[in-house]
Image (cartoon, rainbow, N blue to C red; front, side, top):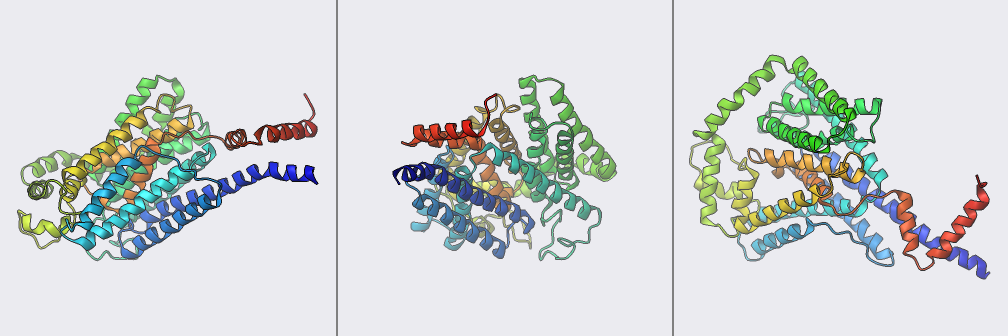
Length: 465
């Protein structure tokens, strides 16, 4: 009787660990299911899609809470980015409590979206613990990105002015893929394309797998150029420059050159084959369009008006999400169109949250890059470094693009950015399932007896030699 009870007690830690790993997998699947859903739902900009994001995120967080409450103790993994996130939340709360916003309802609505971004980032940091999960996610993200890019390419070759060839946008737009705005499609691919690209340069991809990953990355990258987004082109080139610098620093052998070379050749071939003259014309307008903007174009004019708005409320700004409401009184040009965003995420944040909010942004970015660069020394041979590099490249691209557009005002793209930033800055190391179990046993009071029992069972089951 006592022997049976002891054996039962020995099995408890392993059973708890299995339940914990199972719950983590459910939460992680749910988070990335939402991330995959957002772009397909037109960027999750419509009320129904926003509701799905908010309600589903709340359910996932409740599942995580239930797991914590049913365990013997709280197990919370920290991240350097959580501190600026919490401070930013405090700023928005102050705006709401004291009425320091031009439109309280819009500030509250945007605050709920930021809660979703923060919870998704938090849940990923709590549930992504195993190297096998990271490898599976790399494959899933690559397949998803290739599928979306293939659809966007097909729709771009046979357009009819409708989303999915079915739905006509209410206010028009430059449709590409599932997005009304081609710049936002480019923003998504800037974040996703580095995943198969980095994967094909690591030791985890060999032979046909390496070639397939390079081909997928080439297709995803090529559609950034096919979309016609000049900001997207600049952002992706910046990503390639950063990757090239890291490759030179690593100074590895021909396998790296082969992987990167295959990607470059395939991308250039796609651009030459499908893009042709139209792409050349679009690229050739970058210089002239830039000069036009600097001498009085729409974006530059809105930027100058935004500076005037900031000067009126420089400390805490006009309130999160209130830019389109407060902007008309500062608009320096006539138009019948509604200017809903600043086309510059940095300026819009400065206008809406003032110097205090902008300082938090700088703090966030410093922590992101400083913590990410610490983990890149062996990225080609270590799953933690590979995840960090892919995430950092995606974040770098969208941050460059944000100087000339408003990708971070699109819920689907913003959610991807904050999750990738959290992964890039994460101080935790991804481990194998066996190592996690071994560490759990060693931390348990009965670990020594448990490990001896397993060793004895293994010795009896397997012949020596």
